[in-house]
Length: 414
Image 1 (cartoon, one colour):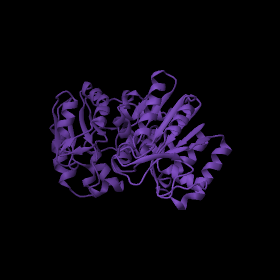
Image 2 (tube, rainbow, N blue to C red; image 1 turned 45 degrees about the vertical axis):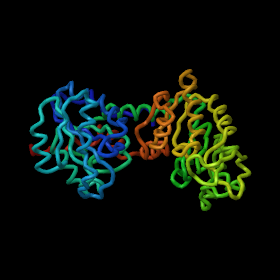
Image 3 (spheres, rainbow, N blue to C red; image 1 turned 60 degrees about the horizontal axis):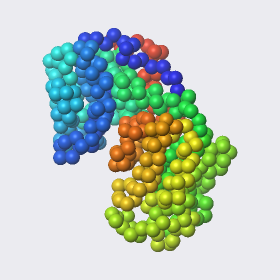
Image 4 (cartoon, rainbow, N blue to C red; image 1 turned 90 degrees about the vertical axis):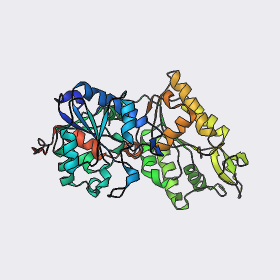
């Protein structure tokens, strides 16, 4: 997947044009205020480039899952202030709809260098259906389409794939960064290469684990999904969360890894508690001897040492998923400890570290170590599907832009 060829901002005549930018502004909110501006900050290189080019900038995004109808609490209006602040106080205008007269009027009033945020795309059911007529109506608002939402590009939604049928298309700066860095994981990454995969369920990452046994030298499995592998090996796991029906799948993954020369590491000790609650009494036991009334909620210190030793011999590390119930102290210890080890290896330039996924980013932010990794992907589902080796519809639309017929001539309604 490395060495991808796709159109960039510099490859198209963009100056003074009206540019539709698909972004991912599905950011954490509380009380009508943005609580994490990471995705907004990562959008700035694209916006600042377009501002310098005197473009009229129209931002398109979804927020949450309104189910194709207007839900006041899911309006994008509260993001205007956060965007304006991120742009150094530059005014960001707001359109109360993303299509129709309100959208056309808002776009028509834009001056060169101005920024307009249109309302939640998912207020219209046609967005998630990938409706061609909806994409055409969106396209009629602009001259050029810039996809800067890699984190949404695993969805074949109208604003992700459909706009490229009607407008010249280019990758935004964040999309470019994601494609270049993540593409290098499978092409050109320095070896040995290791993947750390955590989280609750094997079922949600089954294809990922299968693919990684073919591409990784070391595969570390933590979180509750490790319990399923321990169970498959015949070990007692007490009251721990696991997936009984995936015993055969877990054993197949272990066999495939051995066949492919991929070393799988599972926890050798775990932290157990009677309940998942803050400051709950806990103990350290061997991973093969979890008592009947015990519940594994984190991996133990011997596991962190084992994993850290293996990672110290690698050149590239990819991480998705926490190793324990990091949201509940003290069961964040192993995730934070391993993050510190990787951050130290990164600082010494001994490894290149790449992390992605919502919980993983949250865990690294919790540890205060996000900035000490080589690269942090903004994507969750798209990051996983990329690692699974699946084609992403939004990326495919970019890659095919050079070979598809010229975009349909649009009748501008502005």
